Length: 412
Image 1 (cartoon, rainbow, N blue to C red):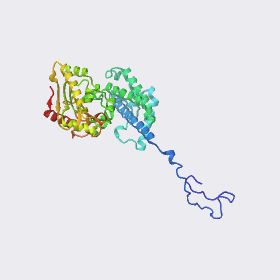
Image 2 (cartoon, one colour):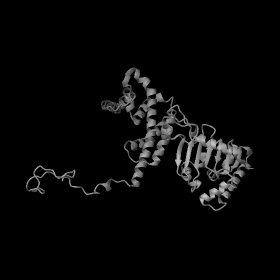
Image 3 (cartoon, rainbow, N blue to C red):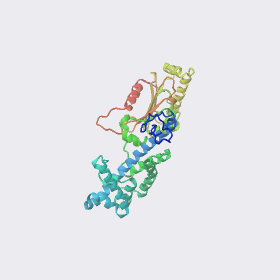
Image 4 (tube, rainbow, N blue to C red):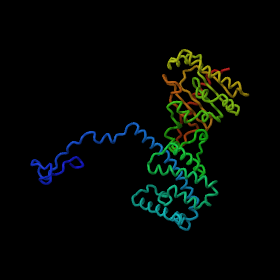
């Protein structure tokens, strides 16, 4: 039997399978292979798929950070070292800059470049230079050898080298397609962000102070408008984005919903007082606990009669106590509306380019704690690949808040 399932031609008389019915040199039809002999070994179950997806996601995030750092370091090395060596050595300036200490790795980069040329791997003429074939450790060697050139622009050489050391583990893991732990990935992201900041390429998105710009968002954020995160429920939101990060340091807070539990139950009254005393303006819109809309919501959720009304009343009373402690109660406004509640939204600094919003839609059988959550970034998208700037979701929710606020009644 051959490897493909075909019977081999008959041989000598004494060999098994050589019968009178089979003429010499004849290949018989393939015998069917036993079913199920290969499939089970190759199948991936749900757990295996989840594992490879997790590996790919982590490796992809790490690769983007490493790519950004390598490109930035290559640009800085070229800007600071090239003017010194190129006038004398021309296109061989990288070889000259590497010197005797780097002779081995720079010649290896030259060889890889030549192979790439012959095989047509150089897709962009701008990459047809030795510098483009240096790895991150080799770029680091050039920087260390010529540190006096970098010293006027980089504050601390030790900080740069420590950050590059932290990236080395991640670089080795990603280049060999091995498993990357979440802890190492987080360390690599922090080290990359520090390096980009030290090398003069830090992010310049205002809301990054509250909601840091993710490397993936920075590159492909235009695909998702101004939505920067989606969480399946509020518990997962707070696990990744605590209430202190959402509301702390806000200069303006506009919130609309039924009971505003995300704010009232997760951000202390003492912190709200300090926020308002520091100059923040707060506007809170609760659903009127005496309205028919509350009764309908209670029926939707299967709650006892009056249960939701009392919960909303308690939250309003708590916010009134906060307001009573302020020197300027006018900076802390509370109103109620009687319309059918459609969503809950917390707009933080929504009047400027530093805004973020947390939004949830109300679902018929799902409590607010269990509803999906969108996190939006105000002030436009991070990446604009074309001059047409499409409006995102943030202004839509801000306009809805203002319309509802105009028709609402103040709480004394």
